[in-house]
Amino acid sequence: MTSSTAPTVLVVGSTGSIGRLTVAAALAHGYRVRALVRDAERASHIVPVGAELVTGDVTRPESLRAAVDGADAVIFTHGVETTEQAIEQVSYAGVRDLLWLLAGRDVRIVLMSAVGVTARSGLYNTLQLAEWKRRAERLVRFSGQPYTIVRPGWFDENGPDEHRLVLRQGDRHHAGDPGDGAVSREQIAQVLVAALSSPGPPAGRSSSSPNRALRRRIWSRCWQRCLPTRPTASTPPGTCETCRWMRSRSACATICASSAPGRDHRLREPSSPRST
Image (tube, rainbow, N blue to C red):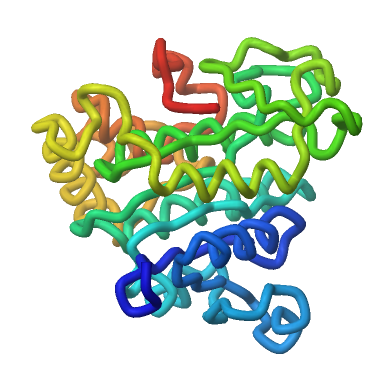
């Protein structure tokens, strides 16, 4: 790839311990990298040289338009573990709002989630962390965009002789310790970037699938109706016109945030999610 023809990749969470490695890996692979940062001056000392710094905040959707404009792919590496409200706003709503801004365009999505994301209780769901990450995954699946979801194990808990990547489908390890899986941050970054050029999602979600076009149309209609009165986790189910309109449409019911965590158990984990 030449600099003029290389795809533009937006990295969300670019100043984090994995985000900055992802930026470096994407640059090394020849991509044009755009780093979403809240403070450009501070980020200039953290983000690898060569990336374009774009100021924005995932908790302020109006600040994200410049970041997504012209982007060919988005890698989400962001996250927070302070309070449940912060987790919802960053790990869930940040993904939701960026996907909404991408609606109508074909943009490759790579979402870094986490091991244990399907756990309903225990360590992985402290402060509803797993709940909101799982709901963010669903947004990606139903967005109509080509995607890869990566669920890394415990960061840097592997020994010097434990760097062989083990790829697993599903999420069945919930012990809450490195025995569930461990991987280095460097390897996570490499996997996230490699996913940009990996084969598309399973049948039914590929770029040529009519299903995908249908999902995109439903997504667009959902947000057109939902944007003025976007529901939150505290909104009781069925209290907005959008929620009532899409109650019979599983894709829109998944996208909507009208039910609080724990109320959406009827939306089961896919039998073969595209996750690693």
